[in-house]
Length: 185
Image (cartoon, rainbow, N blue to C red; front, side, top):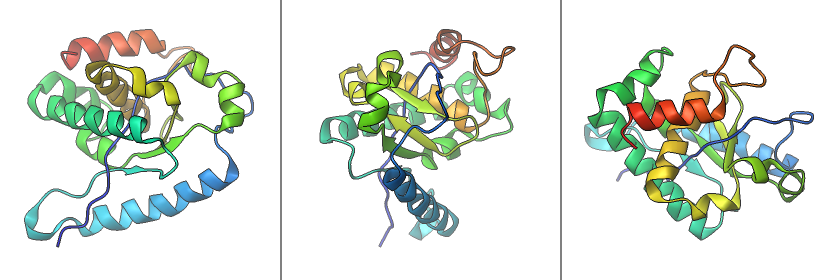
């Protein structure tokens, strides 16, 4: 019997007012999920198959969940099939598939949606973090655009910084353009 976690992710302009993007209860769930994903990935799947995928918080709506699952499948295919796409991650000392398969997808809290993050982006990932916070608007993206955003956010998970927090970093648009070109989105 194979252990299986659901796969998902996306893109953003990083704007922070204090750094908290989710309710405490959701962050606590993310901690539990991180332990679950870490254990499952370390164990691997039965029969020599690849490790299990990422985790999508149960409070993410069905339409966003469906879009995430589709986007991650497409993103994983591009990383596997398009060398330049995988090179985006290896240039950061990371494996693209591993970054996608270890992401925790968490809904942006209602409080933070009101504060504007979802007016600026479809998702947010703190550089180096496993958690990607997803806005409800993510479900309205095309599958290709959602996959591009999944790669964008996975690059942040792998350590890629972004303006304005890193004045030497690329803007969100520049990262999207790079991902679109390198991964053929």
